[in-house]
Amino acid sequence: TDEATVRLVEEVLNHEVNVEIVETLIARGARATGIQGPSIIRAEKAFSLDKATGQPVDIGFVGKITGVDPAPIAACLEADIIPVITPLARGADGAVYNINADESAAAIAQAVRARKLVFLSDVPGLLRDPQNPDSIISTLKRSDVESLIRDGVIAGGMLPKIKGALDALAAGVRKVHIVDGRMPHSLLLEIFTDQGIGTEIIQDE
Image (cartoon, rainbow, N blue to C red; front, side, top):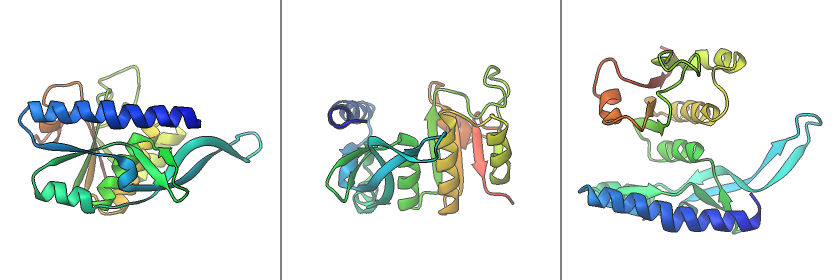
């Protein structure tokens, strides 16, 4: 993410996507407000590793979260207002950093001591076979994650979700869910039915 790109990302997320989500919620009868990530999320510059040399690679304005100020979020929740937060952060250097949205969600859940963290995705949940939507893993225990990563079951865009889930569980979040946001009433079906429709991630008993 170079400087020109991060400026574009900031403009689109803060002033287009966030606004659209807030307006949609309000139109459906909810009370909602936007919170720009850089006002509450702190980050440091992140680096990638060159697989061949093991040396850090500068990937521009991409950040690793170092902290979240939960006070503005708590104020919204106490007033029954849904906060819609952009996955951007500010560094100690004053720069705005692009943050993976799943990592942002997990860090925010930790900061507000959420009981549940739900990732709305475009897949039914964690699939044992990505080509078979019926191969969903309904319950994933923390101890099973390493072997599933090694076997390639957890890969690609699912990796940051699972990593965020584990970090959230370690910080006291009780359960993490991955559900298909395209399915009507997916949140209700996952959380308020015995069977559920997605993947729940839990601590080992």
